[in-house]
Image 1 (cartoon, helix red, strand yellow):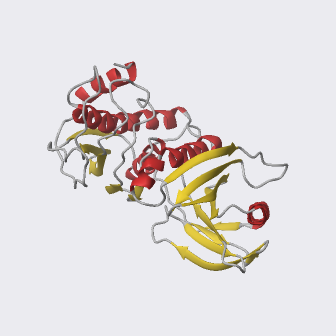
Image 2 (tube, one colour):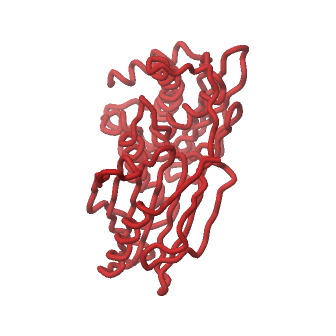
Length: 334
């Protein structure tokens, strides 16, 4: 067994074990029948600092967050059916993931903040040759322990960088002041989500109906522990790793990355790091081109998504749209 897994198992023994329940979806080999497990840890840190750190850790580990508190409370973490990067190449499991539902909740405990992280597998899967008979228990322990042990490690990194974890963190909303028209596209819709973590979505469309969506949101916190490149690459790699779940959810039948570019900012550019993924997708039986752009600006991330049938004219217009948007997009913190 890998050394990382050994260290997690040892660390978990120092935490508090418990049980939780979760809703189980349909499963090919049947639903898992255990009640899951939970581990707890208390940290000397302000609840808002803990919340911001948990948000970052969940994103780093590849979880999609449906909602999270600004301080104390419960996280809405989406189920995942992909292996954690730390163990995906290990031979103790097969390709099929049993699915895991994570439960995260914080509460005040004196000057400390107590965190309970629970994990429950959703489906039965056959064991790998030479691997443990009970894959589910291993997945639960690994999933819960990585987050629970990662929190104090992340807070220690902040202390080493001169940040006092006892100081509160304010979540700001980046309000988008987007131009009415960018290149051949005009603004046709906008949504500002109630949760500031989700930011804003603005849609632009050409006269023929082809459209581009932009998203402005806080994203992963950029700090001494994770710079702009780390934040962008973590999210972009997580997007690619989530293809099996997007296929499972019916968004498309297949997706392949055919080009992976890391554009460099020119002198005076307002952004620090970028990533551009070019994808070939099969959706409703048709092959389409899909482009995923992600840029780190001071205090927020900008994501641009465009999907269309193969067309050099559309690609040219989308490229011009992104180039102009990077020069004209403005935001203001509230």
